[in-house]
Image 1 (cartoon, rainbow, N blue to C red):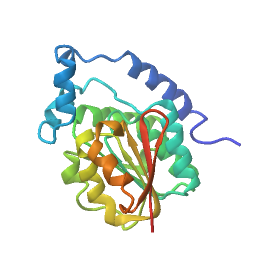
Image 2: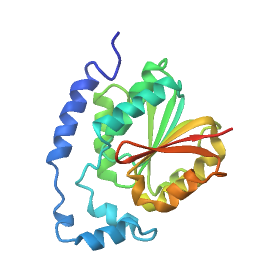
Image 3: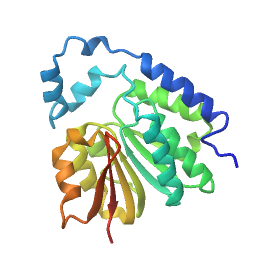
Length: 220
């Protein structure tokens, strides 16, 4: 049985994009110390500047996480997906492929503030044949995801500024259906988020998945 994910045009496109991502460099980041990078990554006031400096870096999910996103969206028959952090659109391609294979409908709303990344992501979505399923909102996600969301959300990917994970969760939380899934990439960089979803009375069932992902389910 073939799937959108494992056949052309998407499968060879993903292979090519992961190769490009692995080769990408960011001259602007070369002069920032590890300590300063860590400080900026955890800042709730300087994230736009920090990620703006990394506009040449792809910062994609791993291939394994991409497949996980596809599997979760397919197995839950997701129709409405929210993504925080489009970047160049690799994770977006995986989730849009699942929407296509779930019956061709559905909607993926993604947020990205860097215009150059949005332009490339849209090119990739068109090349992959899934652009009709995706809406990319340009700007700070604290504003772009603050309104106009579906009444019921099935799946959320958090893969933007790590310090904002709790804030983005708060924006979408009231619309998460019981059983909705939240995948937080590199969640270890957001202790506040982990404390929120792992709290015994927090309304979530949450576990670390692989080395860099937190997988959470919204309880009824």
